Length: 256
Ligand SMILES: [Zn+2]
Image (tube, rainbow, N blue to C red; front, side):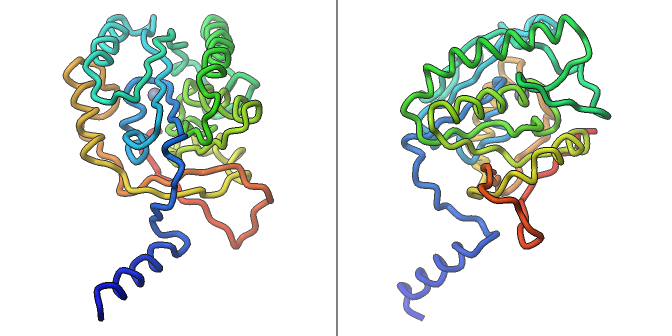
C-alpha cells in the first residue's frame, strides 16, 4: 500500500462513529469554564491546552482554611497564559447534598443546610454576572456536566450557569462525560437530553504538568495516583429524543 493510501484509510477509520475523533475545529473561539482550580486538569485535560480561554471560578473556601492562599499561589505559578482565575469565594457546598434524593434547582441543586444554601445561591448570581461579560463572542464552552461529574454541587452550579448563559449569548455548551456511583441517579435526569459532540484524547503530559503545580502548592484535591482515562467525550443537548439506536460514552469515576 502507498503511504498516501494508508493515510486516507486511517483517516476514514478515525471518522467512524464511536471512535476517537479529533474533528473539533473551533478551539480558537472556545472557552473552558470550571469551578475549582484543578478541575481543568482532572476532567478536561483533552481541551485545557487548546481553548482560547480557561476560566476558573473559585478560590477560598471558608470550611477549608489555607486552601485559598494555596490556590492563589498556584495560580501565580500557572503555566497557561490562557487561564483567568476569577478568585470568587467557593460556596463550600460539597457536604450538604442528599445524594439519595438529589433535587435540581434554578441555581444548581438543593442543599440541606440553610447557610450553605444561601452561599450557594449568592455564588450562582455572582457567577452569572461575571461570566456573562466574559463569554461574549465565544462560540463553544466546555464545562462541568449537569450532575457534577462525581457529584459536586459546585460543578452542578457552574454547569447550570453556563447553560443559562449559552441560551442568552448563543454559544454551544459541551458537558464533560464523567460520572460516578454517587451521581448516577441524578445523572439519569439529564442524560436522555444529551448526545456526543466529540471525543478527544486526554493530554496526560499537560495534566501531569498542571497537577504538579497544584501538588507543589498543597492544593491538589483529588487522589494522588489518579490519571485521566485515554479519551474524554463531550456531550451537547440533543435536538431530538434518543432511541435505542443511540448511545452516549461516559467515563466512570469510583466516588460513592
Ligand atoms: Zn471541582
